[in-house]
Amino acid sequence: MSVAVRVIPCLDVDAGRVVKGVNFENLRDAGDPVELARRYGGQSADEITFLDITASSAERDTMYDVVSRTAEEVFIPLTVGGGVRSVDDVDRLLRAGADKVGINTGAIARPDVIAEIADRFGSQVLVLSADVRRATDGHFEVTTHGGKRSAGIEAIEWCAHAAHLGAGEILLNSMDADGTKSGFDLELIRAVRREIGIPLIASGGAGTAQHFVDAVDAGANAVLAASVFHFGQVTIAEVKAALRAAGHPVR
Image (cartoon, rainbow, N blue to C red; front, side, top):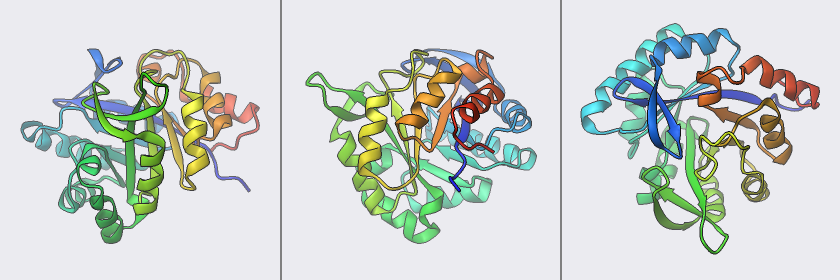
């Protein structure tokens, strides 16, 4: 039997509030993270992802508080990312109530941290988040700072390397499609799918229920979105109905 496709709301958290924009700019308030997480738990979301988009030391304690309060009230897996750079960061997030931890810039700066985290806690807790955009020559590159800076790394190779080092799954963010509601980057999904054997979460560009189906058809094991869920353009139930109608198993 095929593994069920996961539908995952993503909450971008800034100073204790959920925000959302287009291409990581023009951010607007989308609500209280614990309240939104509770709502999504009641709507049969399979997991929830929190991304601390500022992740400065000043905001870090706020994020731990958000995680612990959410874990007390929401009983589906919770992934938390933002500012993770060490085994100790992962340990503290897991103790706060996270089930999985996302790492992005910290892994770019020091790839060995992927193996260190996997060795300490197991690959199942580690999600490699890759913010990817198309370069001017057409290839895919890894970016930092909300897609604004190139990391000088070819994205498909980076995802494959992270999987080899011990990442349990890849959260693949299309920075070009982020917030546009024009559909996931299917070419990017297919390219990464060909190179990795671990679960792949598609992110960036969802605007309709069919877009989620297209992403899974292209090779995603899970689909993640933010604003279309936060502002009610598409519901989790509609996404699951569309996936089911297309022949994909859902919970």
